[in-house]
Length: 211
Image 1 (tube, rainbow, N blue to C red):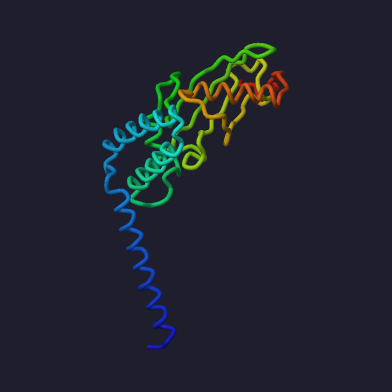
Image 2 (image 1 turned 30 degrees about the vertical axis):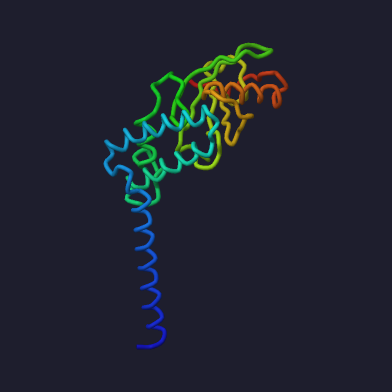
């Protein structure tokens, strides 16, 4: 056997050992988590309740730890493989959908949800449909507050963008105990109207009207 072949064999052994160690570490980290989807849904609903309580108490460290555990749960359902948010049938997406708030209801912190708000402005009341992403949203495992988007309900009414749509990612507010999801959304949009739009809403471009 040549030196090159010996080296290749040794490298293969190292790679196998590394993979085994990675698998064992993952099994240890997730041994307390359910492996069946039906049990995982109930577990994630409890995670949402605990996460909501942590957010209301401004315990962001605890909230982020719960989100990380939710991601571990999705990874376990995916047999430790990546792609937990790769599509509607991916574990993270399924968990989020199965545990989402009822249509029209304000979600708990960490829960997907879609609801409407009316916000008074200097021009006219702003009416928007809000789409909130939960623990699996962009930045959910690192940022204190999750992102959301706002869409015009009536394209003939003034809105916060000429496209009738605006996303808000990486936004934050001074910590306030008992701040709910809709309260956070209102604060962010109100600040956007005042600071970016200078207190004035804009007309939605007819190009973006739904037909």
